Image 1 (cartoon, one colour):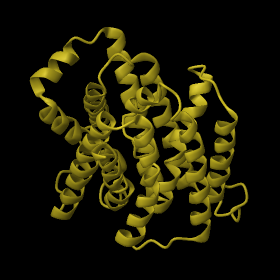
Image 2: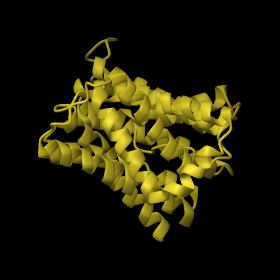
Image 3: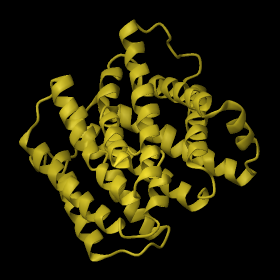
Length: 303
């Protein structure tokens, strides 16, 4: 029971991800925001998980593993974050909460193509339902013809980058502890982003901006991740996967209540279709022995 409770609790924090970022992109440039939060999260995780132990593990990585970790950091920590934050500037937190679920869909497709995983009728049906739900949202119930809203399209591309990072990690880094992957991903991504930003990182934010960044790192990236892995250790991976379906719904509620966003009918129908399609895929995946390994390979189950 405590594992299921922890899983749902982690979703309560993960649902805040688009809300915190939506507020922050109005105050800080996306590239600088991604750089600061990545470094902040990486250093805190390193301190919490044990600096000496984790540094020793990092030092023992082979050249190939280091290259793969850098690749994961590039796609999952740099490209995906930049795409997501820039998309969020032109979209709503509500849409972001829903559209980041495309990551699960794209992971399933890449799993079939890259990892040669078997595909079933339930996965195909679930994929079709999710694609239709996504189309409903990005075209505003097809009132935008075939022209996707730019912000929504960037969020979908960010989800694709996260999915690719997960597949690379699963294929090449399955023998490394997820905690080590998370720490190194944040630190490597932070270093790359800092190099891209250079000396143009403003640190004279007001107290509210620092409070929001601290909330994002502590509540979402630290507490949320801790509860996620605690749940995986105390209940089945299938239970955790099903609990994660609550994340987009909570994100929508937070966006409406905390940001005052208006929930449109196309978002309700499109979101319902996406969650239903994802549920069809996850219910099937829950019967597969390697689901726990698949979920453990995720860097952040929030996008």
